[in-house]
Every structure is written in C-alpha cells, then in structure tokens.
Length: 98
View 1 (cartoon, rainbow, N blue to C red):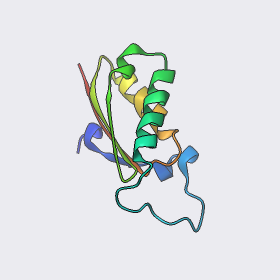
View 2: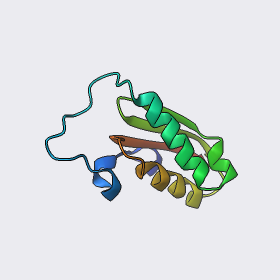
View 3: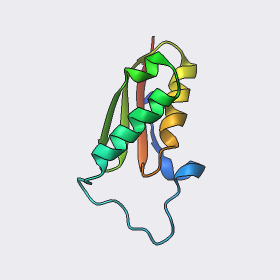
View 4: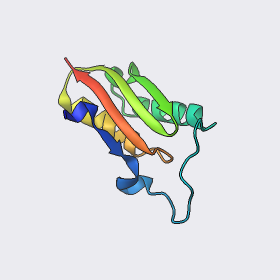
C-alpha cells in the first residue's frame, strides 16, 4: 500500500494520545468542523503557500488530506503539522507529489 493511501493512527503520535479511560469518538461528531478548521490553521502556520491550498476533510475524527504538493518534503511536513492537532483519530494522507 502506498504511503499516500495509508491511514496513520494519530494516537501513536506523541502529541495526540487520548487520555486513559476516554471513550472512542461517536459517529458524526459535532466537532469535526472544528477539527477541520484547526487542521487548516496548522497547515497555514507552516508558512508554505502550497499547503494553504489543500483540501481537508474530517469525518468522525479521521482527517483526509487531498491535493498536490511540489515535493515529498512538503507532503511529510503537511502530515506532521496535521498529526500535531489534538483530537484527531487517524490521518489519511492522499497528497500527490507533482
């Protein structure tokens, strides 16, 4: 499976561990819109213009990144910026390098 299609569990990233005893997210979480806005802000904060034009989708705490970036470095940078956002369950990095 290519890395771009892999689902990365955010809980394995040190900044996104769910506290012990916390329930798993319920379907159609009302805070998905908030997560999408937070992810968008995190991408903008990188200072790279190509990361500002990415499509961010969130459903049930799963973030899907779509779009094109010019380098694998920017793909990885986008992924790391998103994984730092608290409240994300998984990340599907579907960015294309062109």
